[in-house]
Structure formats: C-alpha cells, structure tokens
Length: 281
Image 1 (cartoon, rainbow, N blue to C red):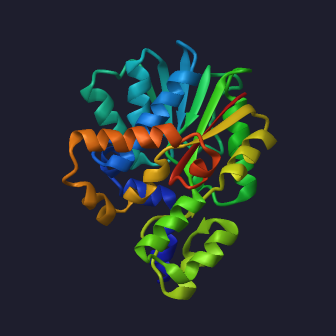
Image 2 (spheres, helix red, strand yellow):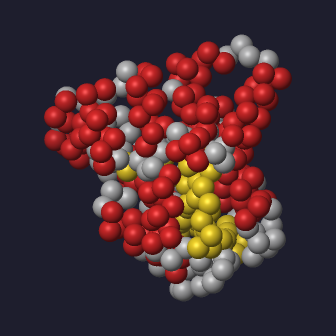
Image 3 (cartoon, helix red, strand yellow):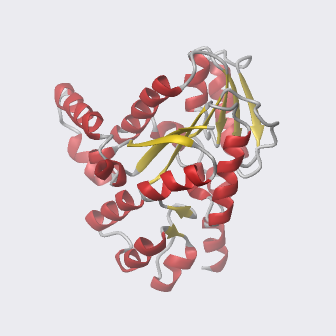
C-alpha cells in the first residue's frame, strides 16, 4: 500500500483528480446545500458591503463566483491546478473573468502583500488539509497578515465529532476511531495498521474550541463559531441521504430550517461535519 497511501495523503494530487465533484458537492446534495447556504448567510453578516476579497483554498470556485456576483473584486487561490481549471471554466461560463483573479498557491504562503484585501475567506476545509500544527498556525497568520486591520477572516474546517459520529453510524474504519478521537489526524499513519485505505486524503479534523483557539492564538479577534450542516451532518453519507429521496419540498425546507435554527449552539457546531469560525484581523 505504500505508493497508494502516499498518494492518498497528498491533498494536491487528490483534488487534482477530484474534477467537478467539489463543485457538485455544494449544489446537488442536501448536506452541501446546507453547508453553502449557512456559509453564505455568515458572509452576508460579516463581509463589508464592497471591496477586495481573498478566497484562499477556493477549490472549484463556488464561493468566488458568489462573491463576484455580489459585486466584490475577488482573488481566488488554490493549490490544485485541477480545481483551478474547474473554477476557470465556471467563471468563464458566467462572464465573471474581470471580477475574479485566479492564482495557484498554498494557504501557508499566500504570496500577497500585507493588508492586500478587505476580507479573507478560507472555506470548505483547506485548513483541515494542513496536518502539521505549526503549519496551521502559520496559515492563520498568513490569512490575518494579508487582511486589512479589522477586516473579517472567515475559516471553515472539517469537524472531528461530526466525522466520528458519521463513522460510528456507518460502521466505517471503526478500529481506528479511538486514535482519531485522540489527535484528529486522518491519514495513512492512522489507517494502515488496521488495513484500512484512505478513501479521502490527509485531513485534520477539528474540535470547535480547537479552531477558536487556533484563530485567537494567531491574532484574530471577536471569533465566533457556527455549525454548517449541524444536526443534519449524518446526510454526508450517501446511504443516509437516500432516505430523503421521497421527502416533500415542505419537509426538506423544514429540515433546513431546523438546521439553521440550531447551528449556533456550541454543541451542534462541535457535531457538524463542517464548522465555520469568523473573526477579525
């Protein structure tokens, strides 16, 4: 498993091969829609009315496109050339080329001047693919450095308890779960001793308080957290999503309203597959 394991632990290679799936994830699935709509509602609350926004680790460009459609000037950066290709095509389809600048790069080295943007977003979990704790500190300092003083910095990550709950419910990689609880790192080093393959890529799953402390330790202030999929995080699993196939539009709306009404509860945020922190540079 050596070569395959090392490949699975390389987020850049994983997302290069991921194609349109990151775009589709936020559109066609109930968990993705919940993640996207709750994130957008926080952006609407926290972003300035206009200006230049950095979308760091922007993936397939869905948030960059939303930002451009709201009138912001956007710089989108991502490590994956494959995801940048998807983003470029989606941006071109919507005629937004003049509003979005695409760059290849890492959230640990943004390559932008200090105070270059009015707000910074790092959404969908890029920070979760930084496994070294010191590198996560550095990444947050970079997000703060390029943001104008007092400007909002919004970071979403993948949640540890949400992942553990999902794996328990679905019977996935069960023997590895006690160690995953201990340090949050999901990679070949965790999985190989049990003969499990990494179907995803190297990931650090966060507790809510861990994320808040990380941001505050590296200079962000007024940090708040919210769950994105919240109580509906179990629908991240395809088999569980299928149980909603025949629900009515009214029932689906009730699910989404229930999630949004409870998403700010600390316990709910901690149980979410994705959680979002918002602070100020």
